[in-house]
Length: 146
Image (tube, rainbow, N blue to C red; front, top):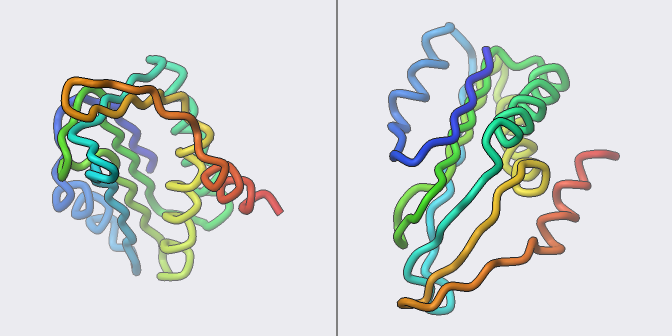
């Protein structure tokens, strides 16, 4: 089971986790990304390319499902403007064993940072600035290829 959603509204971590637990799996791993207030950031805004973004997220879920034998995979990524402390992204993986769930969860968050077409703008008060992709994110995403 693969579930991907790109949405403006907040997500329910417990409900999403329970949905995968209901399949009678042995392990569920989750990752939740939160807006950080680094360097005076007061909010962020994420934009995406509708259709293409969802397809990219589905593709990386399919790779993880095949590579780690996942029972289920959920990615929910928010778009729009979000304040410091709000959740941005949720990744949930389910498998018969913990190692597969944990590794797949790490893979998915690393790869979505580089493979899915999102654009981020940071706000410091009323001043907005587009954010470049980090070299460290690219390197971490590529580390799964070898």
